[in-house]
Length: 368
Image 1 (cartoon, rainbow, N blue to C red):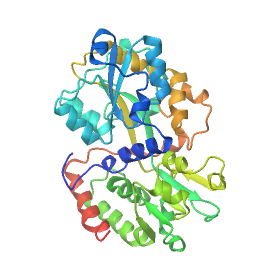
Image 2 (image 1 turned 30 degrees about the vertical axis):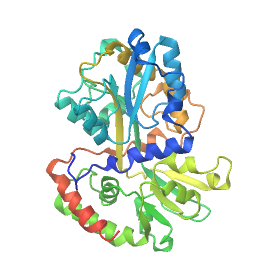
Image 3 (image 1 turned 180 degrees about the vertical axis):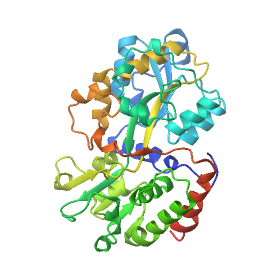
């Protein structure tokens, strides 16, 4: 999975997406751990839990509530990509108990004996997990090694003041009248997946002809109309008015737009009904975790409906994984769980990844 020219898509967007969101929210790692840091002596004398999670992906308020209720200290470290997380843990890590990999890395780490098997008898809130999410999670549908944390996807944001009429399809990027006002993610699996879906194929197609057709669609119909492929500044460019249509993550786009601005009222975000690539991040207990029981307690804590609702509201997410939490949300999410129904998780493509890499790096991204 770590080939130099065949990098899984999340390396390009998910980590940077969350890092950018963290900057926007004005959070810092020091703030997250405020009141939670301790000396080595204090940690040795008291209870603790060591978490390794995506950057800015668990609200400070949730961590503080957990610490207060159970009288322990949470050590919270962050990673920007699955690859960095995996490499660090393979090299010995730092004694983490709980880690949050994406689906493909759950499969890899379980296969390599890096994860504890989940003892479901220690978890009372698994019934809150939406069965639809487990049906999607074919990498671990029975939660043998992982418990789903969040299910999400990229979509399209449109400034309706500038673009009043449009179809809610990926084909919006074919519109020549919007040339120079649109961006798509600098992400191989996302953009190639969108093109495959537009043609009626799977985002995980291994058919050379289908992959070639997706490449041609991007190069001929989409790329000529784009300002650029952009995985980092699309939200800011949209908020500034430079771009009118962007592919990206809702929480990044809306985090850049002032709360009471006209642009926020004019912005529509949607995941095309034909689907597209999606991701599920999960909570996993590392093999030989020193704080095993505390890790189980945290997983169960997260899936209390009121806690999961707080997590989702903080980031403007729908409560995709925890069904009862949907009734407790107080902030309208940027999209709905139902909008993800037609999406597909990005699978490990094995040798077929080379076909995507050739199409993307040697054709689509040539000259950019």
